[in-house]
Image 1 (spheres, one colour):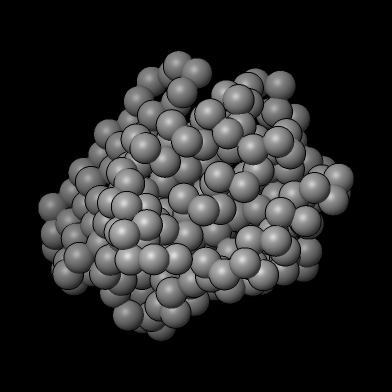
Image 2: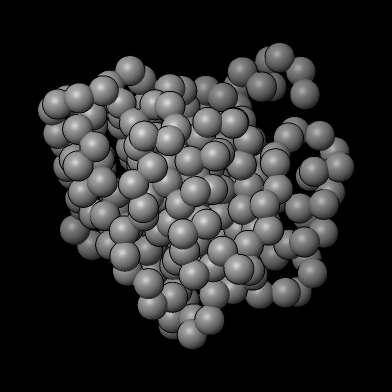
Length: 227
């Protein structure tokens, strides 16, 4: 990938990613998808950055889906793209979740165009020293994840702002908190736990990992795609 294309992709805001995702999946975030799964679906977990990916995986590992989770590191190469496309066209019901940089997210979210996949969650996260911002787009099937994330952010003590929108209507959520301590990677673990647990009966919070991973800085995108 050349520098101009990578710069363009990394400059996409959540609105652009959301527009691309909604176009690709044909506004498939419908209430018909809300039937809960009695057992966790096979789950492909996509991560890239070391610190963010490790915290996200810690959350996934604490969920009921951990026993059926396969972890793959993302890249922008042809082998990764073809492998993911093949999996999307396999006909196997599964969930694809991840926390990646925005360039990787733009590529991943563009792939399932014709596979009938459904977006359950899309989030853009910006983390700096002592604070973080989270802009979320979620289906009803992900109800509660944003509030739990807000609770985790408040408990960690870093400054934060969180906004959630529902494309098919519903009350938007807006939360914020002033900094009481330094930043944390807890939010990444919380998202990993909740996205891996979607469709199941587990409503517990992610385990506290704040002392085990360094605070995150940078731009990240989280997603859950039901295939």
